[in-house]
Image 1 (tube, rainbow, N blue to C red):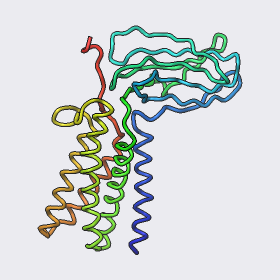
Image 2: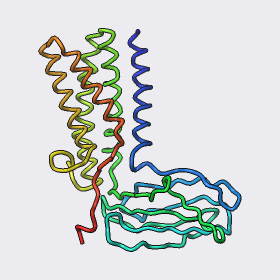
Image 3: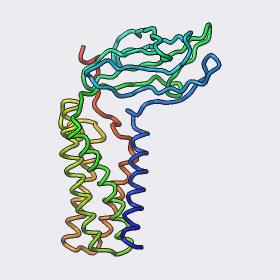
Image 4: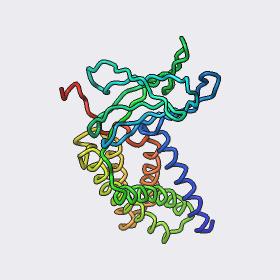
Length: 268
């Protein structure tokens, strides 16, 4: 197989894996559709918002007689449920969740009312949980995302180059995977975490953040693979495959799972 074909296949697979991780993460909006007043209503309920504003909840209804309720309270709190009548503006029902500090969460649901009938918009019978974060500058976030994408591209390519015995390209891709994880995950990832939630590191051993922890695990295995490769150990390619496989598998763990969150019952 020609190298350029391996590059293209690796890019396509990396895009697919990155997309899968994004849509399965706990901050990806909940979407769906319901029938309301004889019309199909498509909705998207956010699960992430910035601390600088209230979190706006907008439902496209297109019916001037539409009525909706936003029901919410702080997640992990002793609060009572709050009810807010959503406002109708230009074909939309609009409500807003109060601001919370970074890592604070709101649990909420939207209810459309049609006479004595109520239609709940939520995640398959579950309440929606929205997490607040502080703004992250684009000059930090964009290179972080790009480097994390490159890390999966290099990991996939490494496996192909092991299979086809392309040692020169293999060495380049192994170092590429290691550098992209080091810079994108451990360094820029920590800076993103600091901007968003006020802490550089919340993974093992100081916390339970799975995103931080899995980056650390991946880095350790790439270090082992590089050490084996430099020493030209008999099974160094096996270690490369293991490191690459771990790098790929951790992308099937939803991003931000077990991420930073405030427990208001402890704070109060």
